[in-house]
Amino acid sequence: MRFINRQPGRGGRWLLALLPLILLVLVYGIASSARLADNPDDKLLPGLTQMADAMGRMAFEADKRSGDYLLWSDTAASLIRLGLGLGIAALTGLVFGVAAGVFPLLRAPLSPMMTVVSMVPPLAVLPILFIVFGLDELSKVMLIVIGVAPILARDLEQRAREIPQELFVKAQTLGANSWTLVLRVVLPQLLSRLLVSLRLMLGSAWLFLISAEAISATAGLGYRIFLVRRYLAMDVILPYVVWITLLAWLMDWGLRGLNRWLFPWSEGGRT
Image (tube, rainbow, N blue to C red; front, side, top):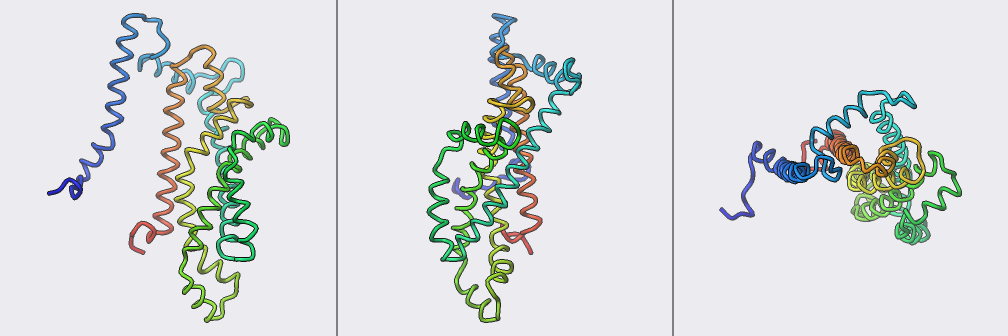
């Protein structure tokens, strides 16, 4: 059998998925043990025990200054900002994507504008956001919106333009008006794509969030990472990076499950 036609079984799929992670942990453990053997005070590659102790303090010991459990308060602050940013970006991207993708009169001004806006590096406008919206939560949320919404809008516009014109002709023949076309023909096609696009943009959204928190915040995962870096606290930084990765993966998994549940046909499932 040719290699291109070989399919892993259920157990083999799990093993292949975990293999890179196992190898990464193994390589890190060997490198960390070698450095700590030469210098027990080395902070560059802390041991797994050191990281577990540090995360235990962050998660289960109240901070003496604030009284908060820092890991959970940082996680809550970041997830609230991320959720608001992605929610507003999804709604904005859907509205502009439908408008530009379905209505030619709106496409003429909107499509070039969305193309130009999507090319602006979001981090380059972060100082402007701080000046306009201040250093509080709004500027961080708006950075996510500005970074994600134009990409979503362009993707949804393209998907809307790919809908066969025959569907619009048939719907109008049956008496559908423009509003009915959007609700009954366009949205069912685009909502599934919106969830897929959100999954693809999760990494960028986290990047924008961490960048904003690193510059101006009093709580959040990005704030904590850049706060402890001055102490070379790799035993906190590395677990925080792993925690952010896990949260992003869980969000991706949740969006994929939601897509399968609401739109089983989108991945070839049974309706």
